[in-house]
Image: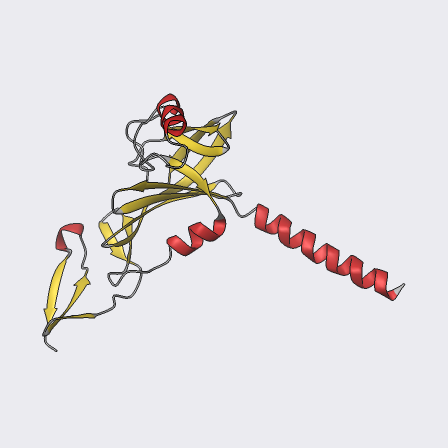
Length: 193
């Protein structure tokens, strides 16, 4: 009897954990050149758009999302930004978002038909600039701070630094990127060794 209770408790914990994991959100990634765009659709209706490039990781957009059939509407937190839409598609076992609004922070307009044609032409290669579904683990790993420049967040006044800058040696000098009040102030600072 005690064995059954232990097993039941274990099963309850496993099921609860998997349910919580499933409710954390859905994740998408678009590769483009030396960078990538990541979208997290939270189970609570929130979303985040993060851009990763050689200079760092940037929170580009965030707000609320809602889905009506296959159409996802993104409503940015920033009142100066317009809502935009994407259509969720599946082709050859790959789920992707096709952006349908020209002013979207999450990507550029590429029709689902063009993506399907590209996937049919080369199934081993994912077309660039298209948001394909990825795992939560991939999202968490690839959107962490891995660059020496810091993580920045865009606010109404421009860019605001939200992570510590690391300093790397560069020849006899050291350099770091630092930030003041506006994006135009972003510049290199040369420090003596």
